Length: 554
RNA sequence: UGCCCGAUAGUAUAAUGGCAGUACAACUGAUUUUGGUUCAGUUUGUCUUGGUUCGAAUCCAGGUCGGGCAACCA
Image (cartoon, rainbow, N blue to C red):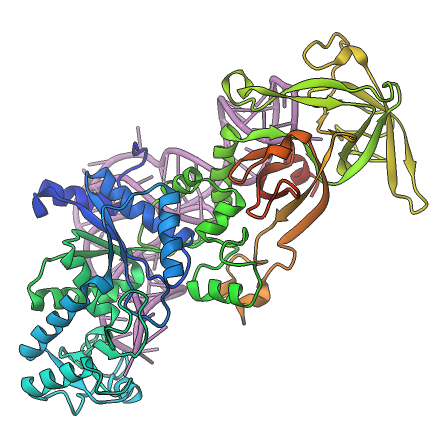
């Protein structure tokens, strides 16, 4: 992909490294998710970054599952992560698991113990926390800090053998309890967990901590550029300390600021809560910022990649306007989505001077953005039609280019009509609109000489297919739910899903398949939901069209 | 009252000591058989104070504001 912008700081670093012949000019990145949740749009940024940088500089990218905490991890997540990355359009060079390296990491640990750089601590979690000190006060040495190498080795081997209970012992690096960097105050390397691991089963009862797994995995794979988010910056000295003491391949860590989106939450913990407490219908609910949610909503991989590219990368706090994501999907779908007509809130329109029982077949292009209209389909036209309730007003304001008493509009791909009268029920609701049509105004060979301002969509009543349409709005009422007072869940937008059960669709939509992308003319972009069947068609609204009329009338 | 990081238009991101630019958003107008699209145009910005310099968004010093760090999570 061409770079239309200046290089970002990571591109500069890598270009410089290649220029200097570092690692022989080789570039190997990695995407390292923990399989404890579904990927979201923030991960997509990281994926695009890691895979994109590698590709840009002729390198490769590994997929590595950071599965060092068996309690929270599961193969369900592994599968969804693999699927999402592929769907986004990226191929990894190798698929690895941190758990592949448990034997090696164990050997690394014994090596550090042998060199007097690590020790087994019998202190409890609370005691360790208390001895850690605070950011402004130094910590204290553990009473077990000066055990002999032999004793440490023996105890560590017995930890592995399962002789101790969870929490009874840990392995810690011996660094500096007075370091201003809290992560250097004898960080934990291993803890005891009698948990079943999704890959190694019950082979291990001790598991390495992030700090003793991530950098080691990077090094084992000879990752050249290990790119992570800013909160790991304070871990870097430790990352480097382990690599230096172990004398292994010098992978290097670089940090960037995670991307935040407004009107949603992005932490896995919060997303998990939304799922577990049924505020949404699963990880792939179309309102979720997950990759699977966006996919179900109708987003395309291209649009997400473009979004990541437009947003760019930097090292400062940010909140990206969800409007940019919407721009990206509109731009993509405008060029590719098939146009169809659907009436969401139908009222009957009767053309008084059109012969009863007669059906005229009209033609409508599939996509005006494509050369030749992208082919066409037949659209039945008859005396009784459905039109949008919003498209008729009893007392229309100025510049209302739709229907009202005496007003004229064009029906898309069909005729110009004039509103003659309307019928109300006892409650004052409009039930029928009566019009006459102008036979000479047929689309394509209009000889009427009449020009109208408005064009409306419609569906022939006798041919219409009833469908369900799910209209989505933002999940939260405030821009940044996590920054507000109290529980983020109290800011959930209770109107984020509006189900329309009686929409009327063009009969051609009977053939809609999951994955198909449509523009319902004048309404927005839609795609069949995963649960849609030929018996019951369900469409999700991906995003509305821009609507300057609605905006002007707010 | 410790250590680390950051601050450019409403949002995001460039400018690497030399004309503050781009995208989205907003606003005008033109085109339009989607109030869509497209096209043309407009508005809006270097956190602050000092210093170095012919010249500072950029370098230096102080301040302000924001974020991160004290999980047997990653």
